[in-house]
Amino acid sequence: MALQYKKTHSPHLPTILLVTSGYHLYREYLLKMVAEHSNVWLFLDSEPSWQIPYIVGHTVVNTLDAQMMIEVARNLPDGVKIDGVLCWDEIRMVQTAKLAQALGLPGTDPENVSRCRDKHLTRTFLAASGVPQATSILVSSLEEAVKAAETIGYPVIIKPRALGASYGVSLVNGPEQLNTAFEHAKAATEEGVPVYDKGVLVEEYMQGPEVSIDVAWVNGIMYPLFVGRKVTGFFPHFEEIGHVVHSKDPLFEYPPFLSVLEQAHQAVGFRNGITHTELRLTQSGPKIVEINARLGGDMIPYVGWFASGINPGQVAVAVACGHKPDVETRHESVAAIQFLYPEYDAVVDSLHIDHAALPASVVAAAPLVSPGQKLLLPPTDHVSCRYGYAIARGDTIEDCKAATELAVKAFNLKARHLSKVGV
Image 1 (cartoon, rainbow, N blue to C red):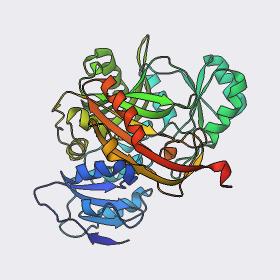
Image 2: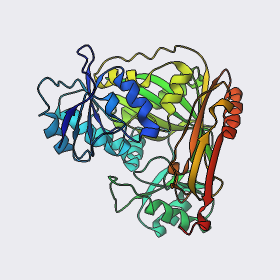
Image 3: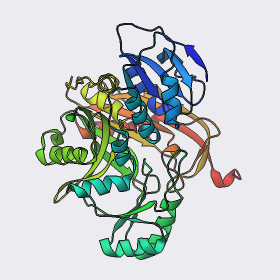
Image 4: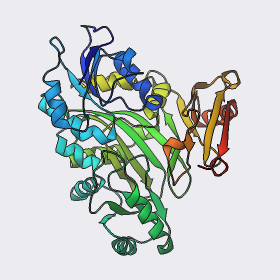
């Protein structure tokens, strides 16, 4: 384990222990924002690189091992006093909750965090409290999946028990599609994700728009941040190809939506931290899809900052320290992100962005690939097949959509069809 100071420590700011930093192309904005409002001591699995300008120090430690992190945190250099623990990595949320608990710092009980991490546990606790959600049956075999689908009625959703980012998720319209979808969900895995004997969920397909909401929680009090309206593609696999955030989304003032949200968090016992909850707006009212015990991914908080001026890094620091966050909207606008995908499975040769050709309302545009990278479209792969993104801000959703569509033309991707390179 290595210890080294980086950025100058500011005695006027709280010190945050951050458990991993995530992939820099998606999370650097967030680390930068957190570092502007705190001194960051970083726990990570290898030596830092791009993180160095934002941290005051770091420890190389196995971030999947809660006990090891606890021991290291109790033996940090003299003068390093941790005021809060923070993480936005889905796979490490339970370990982070254990760390915060052991240090006597604000957070939610690790057992309750695991109720969000394990989608079957989420369903179990929501059902026990009567919270509106999809009917869900846990299965371990194709035979059980067939029976579950017949019980629920087609169409159904087939999904892994403990993954995120729509990995392994499929819409199944009839029994002839079930085998492929079940194997797709069963095979989906990621390092650090628990492996269950029963690891696949068969669920009711809820009709209606799907939305997400990031919410800060302090002692059970709800502070809504950003509502994201999802744009999906690659049917039937629910790839999230974009998100739209309005600072004055009507859902902020819609009592049934807020009520279901609060009921769901009471049911799983989540009281302190930030969650990213997904819901369907059905004809019979809002229903819970899932609760994630972290800030949203896909840069939704970044898009939300452009739309509202609410700073997700500042909020995250406040909540980690147990303080009421500043969630005042600075301006009223809409912001949208669009992710760019190749037309076919490919190997990247180069990517150039002509920034002069971007519309004035595009506030951010960047690559997500490097030369030699393979891009495999869903269902083979998911978010890692994106080659870039553009974020636009405007007065209306239509303004943002038009701007991001124009922005695509400023991206010049040169890539070879995977079948032609013998890979």
